[in-house]
Picture (tube, rainbow over the protein chains, first blue to last red):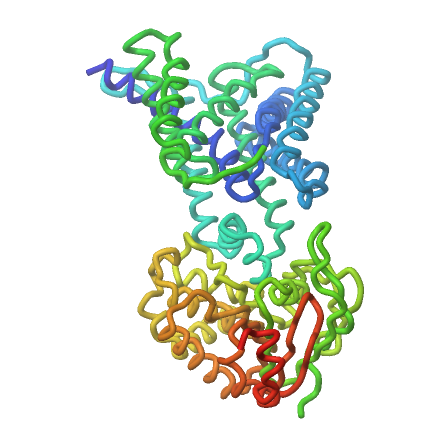
Amino acid sequence: MDVWVQIVVSGLTLGALYAISTVGLSLVYGSMNMLNMAHGGILVIGGYTAFAASQWFGAPAIVSIVLAMAAGGLVGLLIFVVTAAPLLGSKNFETNIFIATIGVGAVLENSVLKVFGPYVKPQPVAFPGVLMLSGVAVPYQNVAILVVAMAMMAGVAALLQGTRTGRAIRATSQNRDAAQLMGVHVQKVYAQVLTLSGALAAISGVMISSLTSLSPTMGGDPMLKAFIICVVAGLGNTYGAAAAAIAIGFLEAGAQYAFGVRYGFASLLLLVIVVLIWRPSGLFGKSRIVRL
Amino acid sequence: MGEPLLVIHKIFSGYANLPVIDGVSLSVDVGQFVAIVGPNGHGKTTLLKTISGLIPVRSGNVVFAGDDITNQRADRTVEAGLVHVPQGDLLFPDMTVRENLLMGAYATERDSDVDARLADTFDFLPKLRDRQDQIASTLSGGERRMCGIGRGLMAGGRLLMLDEPSLGLAPIVIDQIYELIDHLKATGRTILLVEENAQRIFERVDRVYLLDNGRVAWEGAGAELMRRREVVDVYLGG
């Protein structure tokens, strides 16, 4: 029984973490056909902003998280202004923006390296203590991650379904020309989406670093997993990505228990191979041909 | 005759390396029903896209309600009251019919105006009221076209540009679409219609522009075009 509770807790925590990392990435791809390779870099900025707010200025946890989200949102907006907006009309936008954001990601990571140094640091924004659940100690940190992930997903769903801005984002992702003909300022929608995605990436950076630690390269692994989840769910399907993230969290936790920790990531890669053979457009995706 | 609502003066436009519109001039007066006809692939859709701002104007100008809107962003053109119902509906496939209609009124600020227009649109197209919670991609071809027109009506603009609303539909559904257009005309709406099938519009429209290779090859009253059999035979295949 304890083991099962442990697996469920681990699976849910991992899934929630993955969901936070993935939703923003998926939202940007769904709206703009843009694979944002700087997503990991924004995650790093978020983690270190919370660190700086808490460690240097003594800000409480919630303020540090809000500042991290603001920083991430600002970086997302800058990515739109500096890279996406000038490339939007270009012939091979998807390829160009893919390459451009690799560069932006490198700039972000190296800026953090320059300011904070290369050494691993603990994330001061954390929630210490444990909750006893059926004889299993569940750290409050895990509970916080779950709560943040659920609040964030509910917030994104409410935004997309229940607001005028959300309708404009969905309309633009489904048909850009038609959205323009309805009066949607498409560039403004793209800026909003990248800002939102940046804020989500930043909060994900805070949560991941609070569970592990801070380092300038900490964004690589979550971004890779976020891509895996996006591919499994179907690129651009935001709700599918959230569902796939939770499922993949459970798969990884189960594989780690059954075969050992080192097989956790391998099981994800195996899943990607199986999904790509079985459904090349992802579990919830629609077939689409893109020339890169 | 009403005052001019849309005046286009010698516009040139096209795609990357492909010029399409070659010095077209036309005008639509308030309350008029004007049609652009011509063979497939000769620039009718490109002309509408140029007017609404989806394709840039290379030279010439577009004046709407007295304001120069040349190369104005498409979303601003809608705000100005120029509504474009594109070819093939371009509905938002994963949204419900109601959400699609609400998107039509996106540029409208006041909720009360949106509610009133939604009620009017449902009265005008009762089938949409029945289907309002249905996902747009599951509608039939005729229903999709009605939803596209309904979405255009939701914008509440001063000029409705309809791009081949009958394209690809069964004859019986085309009849229904034209009944709708007749009804729109009867309410005094100013309409600019693009149509390949000239036979459908002869008796309905106030003025016709015949577009050939991106140029206006002939213009005149609808009834006059009907009498000019040589024009119909050469350009519209009888």
